Length: 524
Image (tube, rainbow, N blue to C red; front, side, top):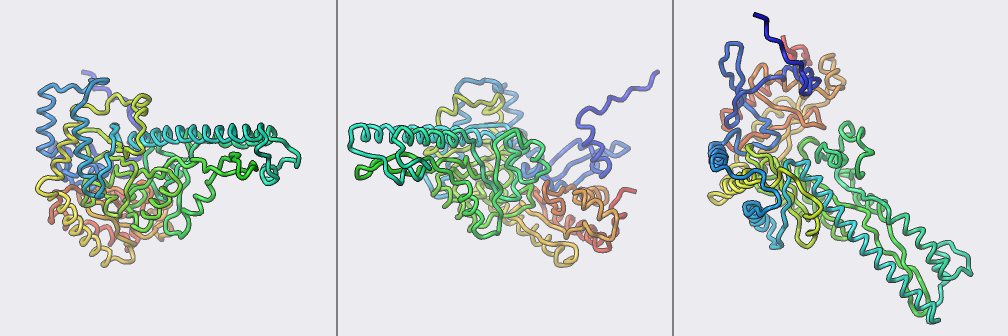
């Protein structure tokens, strides 16, 4: 009998080889709570403590029994997964549930309309699209207002009740005797160049908002963004911790349209601020950027700037939301009321792939529903699971939120203890609730060639993760844009024993790093 042939590796083969080189190419066969299982050479299950938590998705752990039972029941009832262009009352029920929590946490009563998507990145891109539709409408209204001003001024000049002022001619660089038609022609030239400009989106340095064509432009890591720079709208990254940085960016991006108005019989020019900024995207806790918590001071500065200039604030709760920091909306903890909120990951309870964009009704453009759709969004399965997730978070007076705070504090205490024991290795512990990061000192100048080379290649966190998996059966990864920071995002069910076990494994890792014994981190 001929030996069976192996299928060629066609599904991201390069990534598979990289994972293999780091000792991370494990095939997991089962997940439950904070535990993943793989099979050893004898076919026996081996348990791994999973602290990655689906990058913030698994608030209730792998395959929570209530959510699994609901999914089975929905499938057994044959709920329609593909009933597009029909009424979806369950989507409205989920939107209402999210609104109730939003109103309570922010102490507001304005409704937020919901648009559903399938992932966090799609939710972000949906927000970008809606913000741009809103901006285009506002640009059209501004252009119409300028044209109305021109018509009014033209009529006044024609009937002799107004003349073109010297200041208006000078402001446009026109000759002293230039008439009103010359002024209008120069206005059309100047304003026309502005009206065709695309938006600039603002976000913070260290941000991560996805890797799709639009959302990747809002991701600060140049390695993810630069190859695709020409594909979509551009972003500016506002420095964090630099006083006056936001005001400086706003001043540089300020653009005005000029319009003629008649004042005391003289045609003069007035400025109308052009909506050049599409939106400000902000994470209440930066995930891939290294687990950095937004300060209330910066949150207030962003909100005040948005109100003054007129652009919307889009709060990216994809990783930080759904109770992970002790509230469904982590932004409520820093006082940042968004015009838009994007929820995903935890909204599906680790069972469904879903996301929701919530838009303040005073900013919502209902015509968006006619120009945007998503085939798999708003289905019965994901919406019912989302409703159940919100119910589980809200049950017993929000006991889940309290547990997130308590378990987060216990985990933080363990990480702080490790940092205190190894100050030469650990730079900082930071985060909030069950969204924590432990950062190691930069190893790019280490005396160990293994540590030095992997640090310079941006792989040191993955080397550490491979060691923890191999030697301690603990699964943890670095953040995407801060390779020296390990993220820790377990479920609400994380036990004291698991936390203590993780602490012991970190102490083992820190002891190796303290000795600069890079070879000890490698397989074999």
